[in-house]
Length: 323
Ligand SMILES: Nc1ncnc2c1ncn2[C@@H]1O[C@H](COP(=O)(O)OP(=O)(O)OP(=O)(O)O)[C@@H](O)[C@H]1O
Ligand SMILES: [Mg+2]
Image (cartoon, rainbow, N blue to C red):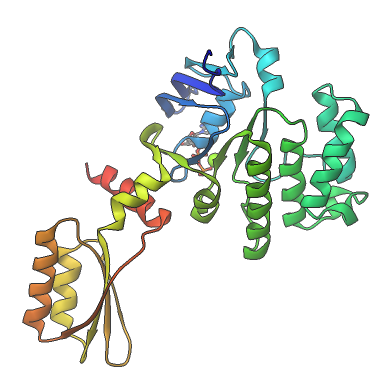
């Protein structure tokens, strides 16, 4: 059996912004990656890394300076109409929906754009209104909704046409903790149920860790990491430790730790010192323990810290900065 066509193939994508008065901005530099159908991939990177530009180029909202993009096998340059039918997006914030229309009208409008007649789109958009808990507000103008609700309408509109590929650029930006959690859970449920291909960009690692199995990290327009979340966590799993030192504090020890173990965090309670350190090799562990021994403090406890994606991300981006 022929293997299914990848949902997305990006090859040598480059975007340089030029203007007469300013030096050129190399927003995206020759990036390539492939996303298989049903994958959920996180697109990470510091502010200005090039995530939104990448997404806009893939969607044909911006003309790339170089490179090719194929969505479900359709080439962006040659088969743009088919490509448009295969992908839908919510871009940074909720500005892509119509604030003077109701959530119901927005959903009908966006499915209409994809040529889906109402009688076919309604069962699914009703379902979306239900799972996003927007039923009560479905007939109020979007401008009268809270920002969290607006965001949910925007995400629902991106999902409504049921395109095989969906881009969610910062779907939880500006949401309170509870609404972000709720939206995440809803997305997780939909991802599981529907098996669509989704590319999510977010600064909220909880969103990425919850939804994605694979992440692509972009920095200054280039891909620095493309790997399974599990592998990235594994890389840091054995290296992060939390030490509890009893019988007091020692400024010399704290200074030495800060100098010798970059990224260490030190906190004090009444008579204890808590140290969190990354110890990449066995010799680092011995070196650390020797420092503690010299200080005269006791090690009352050692925990291997369960690393999270946020920590892995920060380490990877910093490491890249030092390289
Ligand atoms: N229309 C534009 N004209 C000129 N420069 C632009 C334009 N759009 C983006 N840039 C520049 O391209 C670079 C990448 O921006 P982009 O919006 O893709 O970053 P991002 O990774 O989405 O960042 P964020 O996390 O802040 O959303 C930045 O240096 C930005 O200033
Ligand atoms: Mg962005």
